[in-house]
Length: 194
Image (cartoon, rainbow, N blue to C red):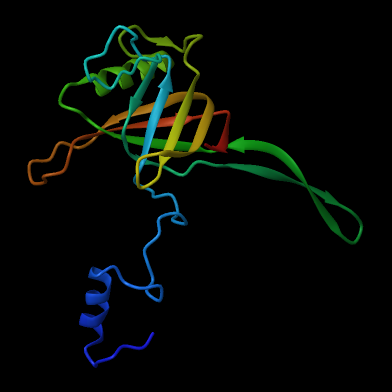
């Protein structure tokens, strides 16, 4: 693009402020990638349909929370090595899903902490010593949002159960939000475009 004077930056911004012209590049979010900081997490079966007071519990019987961080989600397939006299072949073998970690802000209301502790208590309840219940495996939906907070992609973890529950360090010298980490093991994950 050619400008009339030597003060390129000012002329560019003057044209941009006045509506620009066809030669100027415009910012487009249509081809943006999904951001790593814009998502919601829904854990099936923890909602309370009678609660409509703005708490994290929604009305579809799912606990829906904004999550601060989610570890990598994926799976791998082990190799089956077939040795022959002078060569070696590999075939796909056993499927194995990874574990992941969800990090949630510990909200002042305590709703998130109570619900997440109830979930880990289905895997192991430290109050009673009971290990596992029939309802411990749940479906988790991770909804990725675009810049306008419109759902664009959903990752669903099937057969997910809480594996660990950790409260973040309490430290007087920092000004960070207090968080809760929940480790999750799942059977398989599916990704779909919305």
